[in-house]
Length: 269
Image (cartoon, rainbow, N blue to C red; front, side):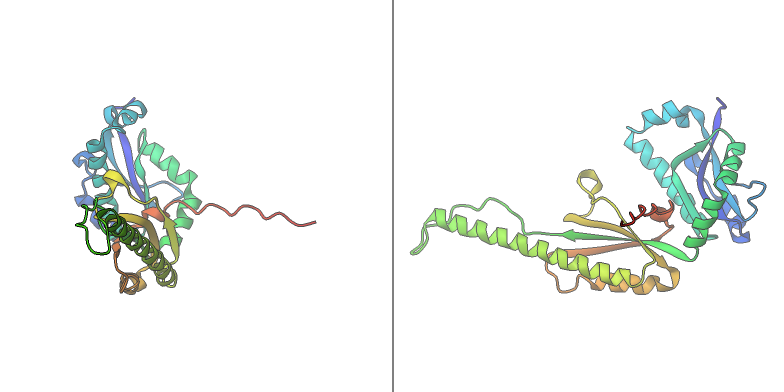
C-alpha cells in the first residue's frame, strides 16, 4: 500500500477557468488539489489531492465512519473544493471519500466511465441545485395545569377541553404543511429540470427549529434561479405554523448519479 492515495472530488469539463481556480485550492487535510487528465478523455478532468493511506485505506476508512468529527472535517473540505470548481466549470461531484491507489487509477476510471461522465456533464451544464425544506411548528404540547372550577366546567373538563384544542391546532398545522408541499411542488416543478427526494431530518441532523416534513433538492437552470427561490418561498405565505427554507445554489450533488432506468413495461397479450 502506497503512503498516499489519490482522493477524487469531482469530474469536470476541462476549461481555462477551471485551470485558473485549481492552483490555489486546498483539499482534505490541506493538501493541494491538482487536475488529472486521461488519454481519450480530452474534454474532462478529475480533481484530486493526496491523502494518507493510514486514514483512507479500506479498513482505516471503515473505522473512521464512526468518528463524526473526522467525517465532518472531510465533508467540509470536499464540499469546499467542489464549490470552488463549480465556479469555473460544469462539475459532476463524486461521493465523499472516493479514493484510488494512485493517479493512474483515476485515469483508468475516467476512461472506463467516459461516456457516462460526459452524458451527465452535458445534462448538468448551466444548472444548479437548490435545497427546499418544509418545517411545521405546532403549538407546544405542555401538560395543562388543572383549571379552577367554574360555573360550567369542572377542572377535569377544562383540562380535556384544552387538550382537545391543542390537538385540533396540531391537525390544522399539518394540513397547512400539506398545502404548502403541494404549492412548492407546483411552483418548483414549473421551473426545475429535476427533483430528488431526501429523507427528512431528525435528531442531530435537524439543526433548524420545528419538525422537518419535506427535504427535497431541485435541479434548476441558472437563468431561473432567482425566480425559483422567490416562487418557492411564496408558497408558504399565509399558512400559519409552516416554514419553507430554501438553500443554495449548490453544485448538483443530488443529481450526480444518472437516474434509475424505468422498469420495462409488460406487454399485454
